[in-house]
Length: 356
Image 1 (cartoon, rainbow, N blue to C red):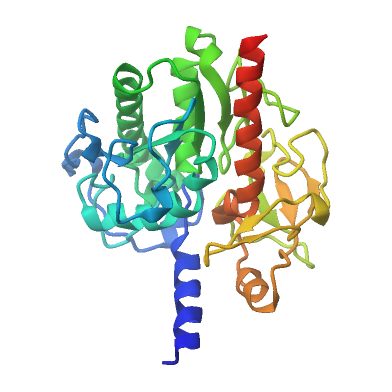
Image 2 (cartoon, one colour):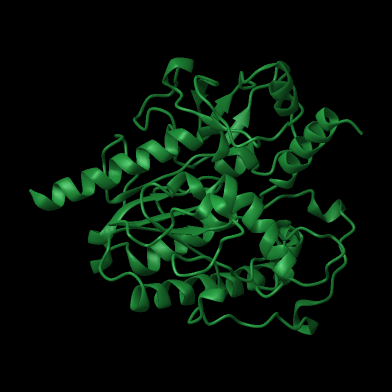
C-alpha cells in the first residue's frame, strides 16, 4: 500500500471510529447482540474517582502519550466537566456497562471523543472527564430499555454523579464550571444539572452547559434557560445535527426526528435565535487530520434540529463526509471552532459580570 493510500485509509478508519451514539432507537433489536439478563450480569468494578486513574482526563493525570492535552495544566480560571458519549458498541460483548479499567477501551475514547470533541473546550477551562461505566449502545433500543437498559443507564449516571461530587470536594476550589457532553454524555449532563445546579446554590457557578446530541425540552429545568445570545451565561445550549437529502424519505438516523418534536435547539454558529447561518459565519469544522476548515457549512434551517448540506472542505474530504447519512456523530466536530471560541467568550463574560 502506498503512503498516500495509507493516509487515506487512516482518515476513513478514524472517521468511522467516531461513531458516538446513544439515544432511543427502534431498529437496534435487528442487530444480533450477545446478551444476558441484567439480573445475571455482574457489573464491572465501580470507580471511586479518588484516584486520578479513574479519570480519562484530569489536570493532575500524566497523559504525555496524548500531546493534544498538553495545555491541560490546571491553571485556568474555570473548569470544564466533559461527559463522553456512547462508544461501548461491541455487539459481541455481553455486558450492559463498560469497564472503566479496560485500557484498550480507554485509549479508544482518548483517541476519538476526547481528542476530537472535548478539546473544543480546552481553551476555556481545566478539563475533567470521568471514565464511567457507560451503558452499552444496545440499551437504547426501546425493547431492551425496559428490560435492563434503564438500569444500566442509571448505573452509568451513578458513576457520573459520584465523580462530580469528588470533583467538587477535591478539585474545583470554587471555580466556575462549564458542563459539556455528547449523546449519552449529554443525557447524563441533564441529570447532573438537575441534581446540582437547577434551583441550587451552585447555579451561580455555571458558565454554560453544552448539551448536543440529546433531547432537551423546556420541561427539563425550572430555573435554567436555553441561552439565546453568544455572551449569555448561566444556562444551556443544545442541538442535534441532520443532513438534508434531495429526496425526502425516512432515513435510518441515530436520533429519531419524531423523538425531537418538542426539543429545543440552539444555533451552534450564531448562538442566537437565528434559524439559519451563512458560510462566512462558520468558524470551523475539525477534520480528522486535525485541521480546522472555516466557512465550510451553512445552516439551511432549524426545526427541532440543525439541518445542513454536505460541508465544503475540498473534494476528497467532502466525498468522505457525503457518505454519511447521519450527522449525529458530528454534532461537535462540525462546529468545533465555533464552540471553542464561544466557550472562551462566555468565560470572559462570566468574569466580567462577576466584577461588575
